[in-house]
Length: 131
Image (tube, rainbow, N blue to C red; front, side, top):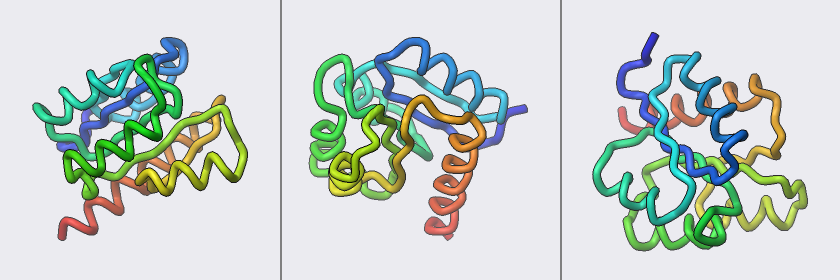
């Protein structure tokens, strides 16, 4: 059951969290590519079309929020919605994520149904903007 056109990029260095999230999203019909760092994600973004970017605040090769900020500036990817995953529930981290260009924030570990709801909302919002 694949949802045509819904291709997600998950940037997550924790293999357990990456497997959990990608498995759940595959069950929902999304195509999911998983990488562990910003450099690999940037390569994917240059060569593939995605409807949503999901990134952790801590990546294999650095700070996820700094990477997201750079991505927004360098690749002019503001039309690509982004969700940030983090262990940090502080308002300061949430604020930093939104300033970096995220449209949503999810504290890990998370309830898979919450992940599903947030992703469906972000993808639906992106589709509405495209029309």
